[in-house]
Amino acid sequence: MATKEQIIAKAKAAILDFDDEAAAEAAEESLTAGISPADLIQEGFTAAMNEIGEQFEAGTLYLPHVIAASEAMNAGVAVLTPALEALGGETKSKGKIVIGTIEGDIHSIGKDIVATMLKIEGYQIFDLGRDVPIKTYVEKAKQVGAQVVASSALMTTTMVNQIQIEEQLKEAGIRSSLKTMVGGAPVTQDWATKIGADLYGENATDVVNKLNAIF
Image 1 (cartoon, one colour):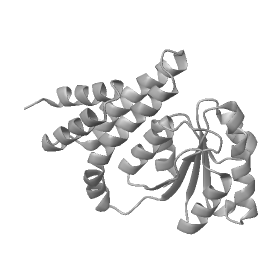
Image 2: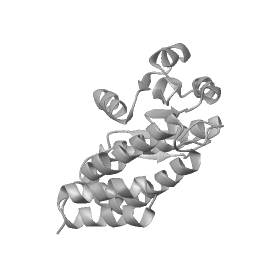
Image 3: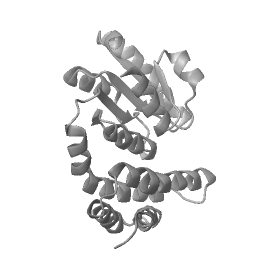
Image 4: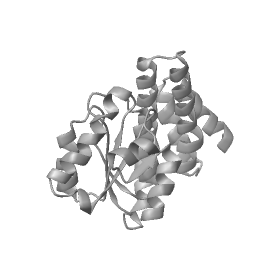
């Protein structure tokens, strides 16, 4: 039987090879071997996605590669989801989070990782996907009674739309009853402060730590 290190290495390689089937297989093997789903996601899938992200920034990989890698990760995470939910089902949900990549932005790599990590931490996640219209965030937040509305922007041209989330939540009369969180490559703490967002998430770990501090 493969060791934990071998299975995690296989999971990582599956993402770097954009191989959905291998990612799902590694996930299944990890469950059989009794490896914590969180470990496999963090050390295998997320570590590989971070490498893909770096290569994308460096210009050695392009958007189709990033999307293919995310799809492979999603295939692996889908296998692990029932196990994660079983773990999370024993504890009360820490909070309801509406998350998505902002309108005009088709990148979802960082957001996918954040959503997965938050699920592992026991939050109830409503993932709106990518290129999400502002009104969708507001409608979903009202519908589910969200405690957090989190938006990711990966381009300077789309991050300005994060201002609209603040404005439209105020117009809907629900801004004071929830926290807003912004993240994404061009986004900074200064930007979050400037637009009036409650929280800035630098990366998935930072997001989890900051939300855990509140909830």
